[in-house]
Amino acid sequence: MEMKSVTRSLRILEAVARHQPVTVGELTKLFGLPKSTVQRTLLTLNEAGWLRANRKDTTRWEVGARVLAVRPAALQGSSLYAAARDPMIRLRDALNETIHLSVPDALQGMIVVDRVDCDHAVRTFHAIGDASPLHATAAGHAVLAHLPASDVDEFAAGILEGYGEETITDPGELRAELRRVKDRGYAVNHNQYLQGVCAIAAPVLDGDGVPLAAVAVSLPDSRFDVGRLPELGRLVTDTAAEITARHPR
Amino acid sequence: MEMKSVTRSLRILEAVARHQPVTVGELTKLFGLPKSTVQRTLLTLNEAGWLRANRKDTTRWEVGARVLAVRPAALQGSSLYAAARDPMIRLRDALNETIHLSVPDALQGMIVVDRVDCDHAVRTFHAIGDASPLHATAAGHAVLAHLPASDVDEFAAGILEGYGEETITDPGELRAELRRVKDRGYAVNHNQYLQGVCAIAAPVLDGDGVPLAAVAVSLPDSRFDVGRLPELGRLVTDTAAEITARHPR
DNA sequence: GGCACGCGTGCCATATTGTGGAACGCCATG
DNA sequence: CATGGCGTTCCACAATATGGCACGCGTGCC
Image (cartoon, each protein chain N blue to C red):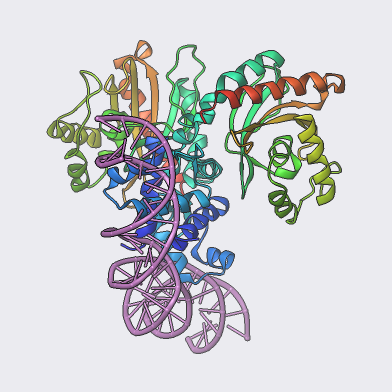
């Protein structure tokens, strides 16, 4: 709407993060913007500490340290994080499997915000801050299932990348699966994204039914027993509901 | 210089991170800016995904997930990070003490970018993303000692907060200590910032002698033996030099 | 109950601010 | 020596962000 320069600056910042170390020229091609505009933006972001030029002469740009300073706040200050902590620990104690809390992000898919580990020697691993695709993970499905159909259609119109035989790459099939997920209350993923990994996820909704996040149990398929699925699904769904209840509206 | 709105937006973003969850009014007081300007900025940042309104009606603002999505790039994509990894691990193996890599940031002081842990039961702890003051840490001294005198003077002109009896709060004393640090090649900190913690740090410089970062060994003073200081200092200095050598110019 | 205060929000004329075309200097390449 | 690509700088123009003002609402103090 407004603040064109700010919006553009942030998009350039994101582009630098994804392509770093990157040059001015590469960014101008990427955005189709005049060189001077990109350059001015880079210098401003640099001045502000969010970007830094790596080499002295031929300037390549990287994301600066300021991002790291802001990051802890993004995690622990969040009211969602606070509301989710205890229920996640209880769920881990009940199952002794790793629990993840992820939030949706338009650009990157689902981003892991918090994790509570199990104590098995064999366990799945997703670092805090990791991103995974919406269409190929249980957490992603849990969130997508509760978005308005128009948003899902818009998303499905993009490329649904395949990561293995199980990945849903067809928009129609995805919509059908999302309907099942919504009816059932939780999503299940087996080998859709990472091979050998299973996950069961349920959405955390706000008062209006808008999905804020997803809680997921993640385990190696060697420990996954289909017979336990209803029980796991119920526990995850209950945990999500508990987080919803504890989250300030 | 330019892009006033961008600079201001980023500063507002940082302020939200520090004070979250925060209201429009609190921010206007903090910056002395018109309400409408702050609000417009918040809405723009929200639209871009960097901020989110927590509640529906009485709007309080938090940092959004976009910040997390940028993190992996800031760390692992950074050439400095890549160059430092192996030397840091070797230093940890040599000493079995925790090693930190920190970068300077004008606003926040030194920010921890990477960490390699020791395996003692008693160890120091600084999370990645944590900030600590330039004038009261070994890493800060290592960096300050290699900045131009004018920059140091400007910095020392600000308030040098005290954190205990050992903290250097006098500008002249700080300058003297920085000269010693530069001559010796490494900085030592004992109880200047956190009580019971010692650190020895050396700077990573670029080709022009500009400090990019600092490597530091950090240990509880119960394990600190002054007799070993020259040895520790040499090892840390060597590690810093190795990182410098591996870092692309 | 009424009044005043503080809050978040929306509007709009103003001029401040960012824009981007063009030109410069540099280096590697043909 | 010419050429193309690169990062960088400049500047007149107008699009853009600005911030004073006003509205509506919930709160707490008379």
